[in-house]
Length: 180
Image (cartoon, rainbow, N blue to C red; front, top):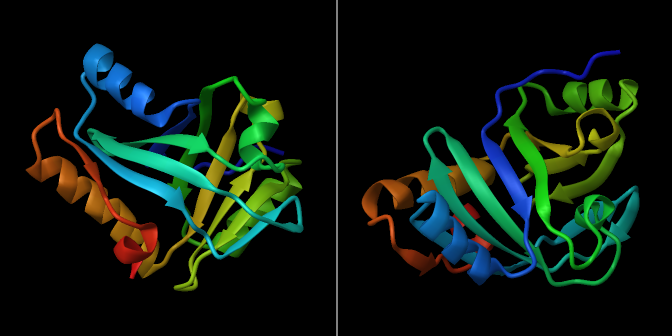
């Protein structure tokens, strides 16, 4: 069974050192400005069906219509990030997509043999699920259950990038302050 197809809105990379990765991509690839969110707290996380705790930081910029996210994982427990790259390794981790019907897309990925590796339940009713498509395409696919909070995060990054010089690196506060 083929994987469901949706428009890619984000490419995300797992990095060992967020600040160094931002400097490198700004200098060598010309990406920027960057909005930094440190120690992102997600209240409800499930890793492969079991409750989990994730401590991570992210840096966000736009490359045209596609958001670029860099993720540094601080926690040591199992996670979808470590499923792809063990501690010390880094690289491309996932693409992200808004889907018209979250439950339908989730079921379609599972039916295609790509189970949910990690599920984030957001305070505003939104969800993000990392579907483990790594055996098909070498990376995960993140799907979103649409919500005002998820839309606010994407909108904030787009607006930030449209209104700041390319060499700006700014602390964006907390995800909660953006998503509420």
